[in-house]
Length: 367
Image (cartoon, rainbow, N blue to C red):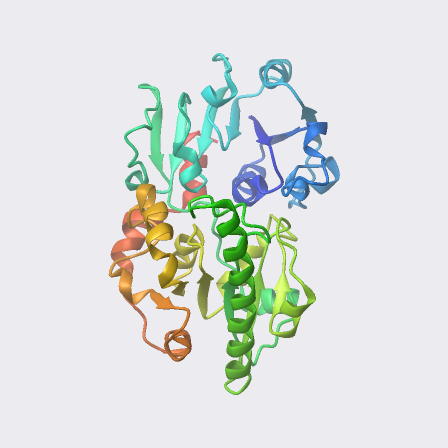
């Protein structure tokens, strides 16, 4: 069987990786089609490092021999027809590419909430973590799509000792996984009123973040904890951050740097901007602490809850919130041995029926 994966960005390999390995283990032929758009290679583009290059295909258990590029959407169907492709995998639907149906079956796989914003969703299969994610009234997939629950198929279990050795981490320390502000500019805060106000708030947030990290580092040094910061290429951190933590970027998309480091940490701490990391932390059964800024809650929370409802925060939410000024409480939440029961949340949004997502996908396609 021949399987084609559409790669718009390197980040896609975080989601594709376990599925590709599954197909490889069953002896099937893998094809990779990378998007090539010269206009994306602008030095001012914050996502410059995320666009796929042919030299950046991850190392899989078996070498993939069929790797090509496309620039126009219609080239996808041309490639599939010429190469006898049976299934096409993408993070977007066929409708998003404005392509007609062909013999190859189109398989859309969920990647957070971004999967539910398409206005013309059309696919043969739609693999979702859980059907409870489909909340938006504006999301109307084609009537004949087959929707299958897979759990968080791209999250894998890792051997802690191997991850610690890979990233040169001290086996005798406990690690706190810290998610910093998303970018160095105010571009991610469009929900905050006023362009000039956003600019100064962003400068304040970065300054406050560094103060918080300094405080945490001083406290943690006394009790055997250390901070891991996982940031992204669209936010390069200043040298000051390296004083207080070990800093990692999205250096590897498969195996996922994010998931590997998350899996060996004691707790996940998110500063200011909520995100999908809460669901991944829940998959690995890690404690979750969200540091919020009360003076901006009226703007941040409505922005989050407008579409996400309780997805990014298990109930009771107040047990996950700590105000940035309450530093003693932040420390207490992080080092406390108390675990909040999130099994209902996991079953609803993260891992319904404890399914192995990759096997669900492979078996359904009779691979």
